[in-house]
Length: 82
Image (cartoon, rainbow, N blue to C red; front, side, top):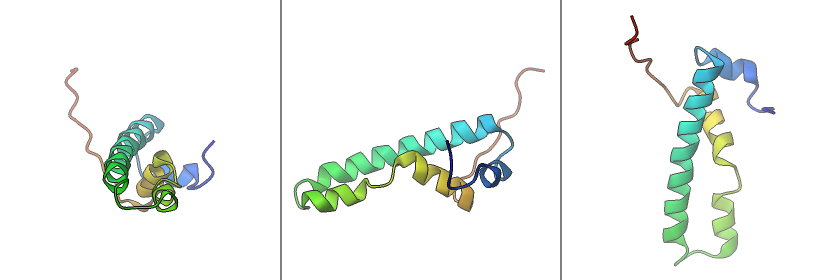
């Protein structure tokens, strides 16, 4: 269940629930990949508590916050089924 940001705010940023799901999932995957890359590099120079702070917020939560803030955009492809 999504509590923050509110679902009404999220849906006002996209054209459908399906778009919200796909957009936030793709962005969460990008964030997750970035976090893992940073974590791998940071293992050599950071303490465990510093590394834990990098991943304290889940990637999907970060993605939905970005959608709500308008930081993530999408472009609808032209329909090929006519």
